[in-house]
Amino acid sequence: MPNEPKHIVTSFEADLKKLRDMIATMGGLVERAVADATSALLEHNPELAGRVIEQDARIDSEQHAVEQFAVRLLALRQPVADDLRQVIQALKIVTDLERMGDYAANIAKRSIVINQVASSFSLSGLGQMAMLVQQNLKSSIDTVGEASPEKAIAVWRADQAVDDLYNTIFRELITYMMEDPRNITPCTHLLFIAKNLERIGDHTTNIAELTYYAITGDNLPDFRPKGDHTSAYVHSVDA
Image 1 (cartoon, rainbow, N blue to C red):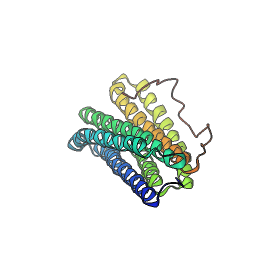
Image 2 (image 1 turned 90 degrees about the horizontal axis):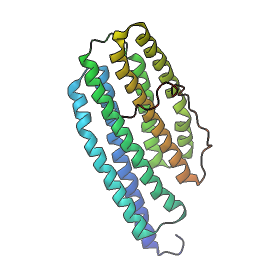
Image 3 (image 1 turned 90 degrees about the vertical axis):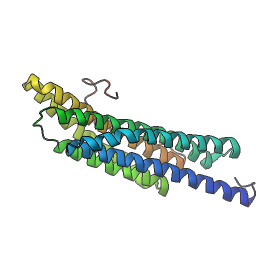
Image 4 (image 1 turned 120 degrees about the vertical axis):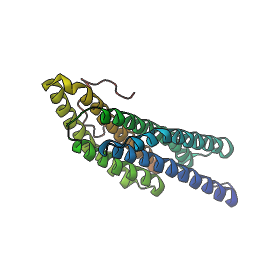
């Protein structure tokens, strides 16, 4: 905005910083929700799962606040070029974050059911997958604040490891279900949980792509690491 008075430019920079801070706050809530949902599953803690479910409403509220502030910036500031990209980025990122919050709540709900069903299956694979997802999520949120295209690319590439683990878990659970029909109910819930984690990883990758575009004005390649080969068996487990 080269032709605008300095005080207006400074004020808009302050608005953009506030927008990034709001995203960081919402991102922190989502990070906590994913971590707590995972802990509720691994530690058989229904009380913690219940808190994750209750906190989903707060994540939704933060999304609405960011959207309202971003729309206000568009209406009053009429940003262009990289400033406009940052505002549009924020609107899209909070949608990804809101979906991650939903997936975390779904994991928490299913963890309660799993705890009520006699299950001798190891949850170490899901724990490892959740750890990778949480690391990538934190890095993606940090990337928004740091405006680092290099870190955005790193997050974009890291999704491959999440998909590889998901494929391994998927095959193992399908095998258990084929071996004994009594395994179908617990394994189905675990499959949904694994898919929820995989989708959180996908939304994290979306944030990395959006951040890279907001910083550079360029898109990452259309092809991105995507190792989920289970779509022929599971078409939709987002619910």
